[in-house]
Length: 287
Image (cartoon, rainbow, N blue to C red; front, top):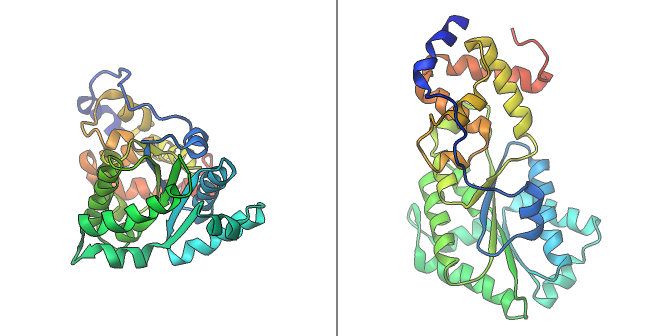
């Protein structure tokens, strides 16, 4: 397969630094949550997602921000347990109006009309959540949402993207920052058949997760085996990508999308080796 490396050159322009959206470090956005920023994070590990959500919510409570959390049934309890263990008085924050908690599945049931979210329903429901925390004198509001993840994982990516667009419209009416959490398995073929670039398009930032560097290293090791060179830097800096939304995604996911399009005959072997390297560590063999 190394012979393929010689044939890759025609797919790339000379490597030059390409302008990409400026994304602050992970901790900066989760801690500061600037008004007007709408950022997402793609996770394959539930514990790492919990770490990010707890940091985002806990910091907001500590700083006196209004906080809205719309989470799934199977994740809300985990977040609240971690917040309580860290010393946050969740019940006091709820009673004071600082913290609003809503179930993602129940909220979707009130928003959806058929297979798509309805703008009027969305504005009425989510607007009331934001107004609830702002009515108690909270001048800065941060929101965390998983409704889009419920739709995405339920096989309704177009509905999820429409909901992201509605969040952006709502940001014209209310001052808030928004953090969207997605559970996405970067090692599976099906992940790259979904419109990942649309997640990038509808967010100001897509934050790399704790696992992304490990996944990138595994992908570079796998592509070196198969093509004779690591692809992530080559793809992300060469201008080979034309989709602005995809350029907001973490490097490895962007590179896998490129492989899926341009080298489809080897994508299965690439992912097989990526899984092996990811599980065993970058330096392990992947026969």
